[in-house]
Amino acid sequence: MIKGLFGIIDKMRIEVYDSKDYKTPQKTIYVQLNPEKYTLKNNIVFCEGQAMGTTGSDLKFSKIEGEEVSFDFLFDSSGVVPPGKAVDGKGVDSFKSTLADIGETLKPALVNPLGEVETVEKQVEEFKKLLMGYNGDKHQTAYLKLIWGGYILDCRLKSMDIEYYLFRRDGRPIRAKVKCMFKETIDYKMMVAKENKRSPDLTHERIFEMNDCLALMAEDIYESNTYYIDVAKNNKLLSFRKVDEGQKLNFPPIK
Image (cartoon, rainbow, N blue to C red; front, side, top):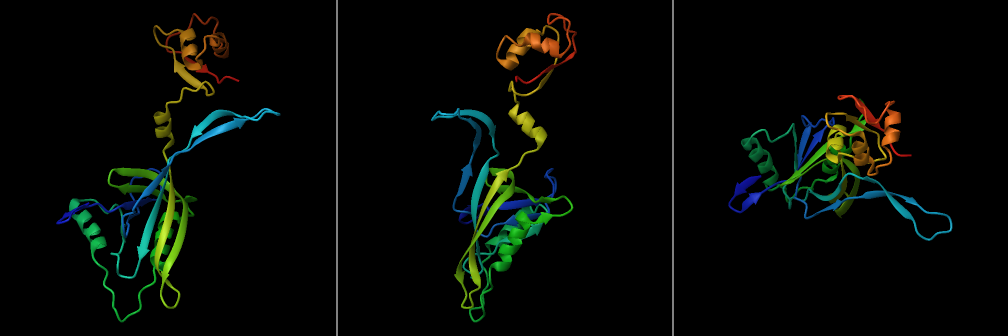
């Protein structure tokens, strides 16, 4: 973000990581122009069961997929648009370095009116390599963090479409629109903590504490008061009324 005579300019950036811990980025990309818009997609997956001879289906919830977001990035080497930039590391270790990095992207491009305009292919290829380059050691593509104003997303690149639409006399492109779709990624431990699943179709573990009641615990998990005897048998209890404090109990999924 940079303050000037015309207010605040907040350049979108993409941090590129080689592992899912998101500790130290390998590169930080400052886009050439901020996108005009972006599209968010949230998808719910159902298991569709339809009996033979019927016209309808019973939708049973399966999962909520990670958020997907689509951006269109403009690349231009004609000199009309200031150049983008990719720097090593985070690129925002201090306010001073942030101004320097972003300021570079705001400088007007210098073009020799008598010379040949550079092709945009190299910029696009470098961008593509950073976002979807394959790491042979880890057998993974890059982990990405999208940052623009208050929007932050840990994600991976799902797809990239490249459209060239302005050309030199020799047919080489000088402008391109790169359409990228990113899919949210989340650490497993964070995902479990976030979802806090209580589904009766999953195995649950509970520690029996003072004043707990097995029948009430089973009713809370299965939303039914008919399964506490089965839970007692599954945990090899002599009686559902006699459970030792501190004992670990397994509540199996309903079949």
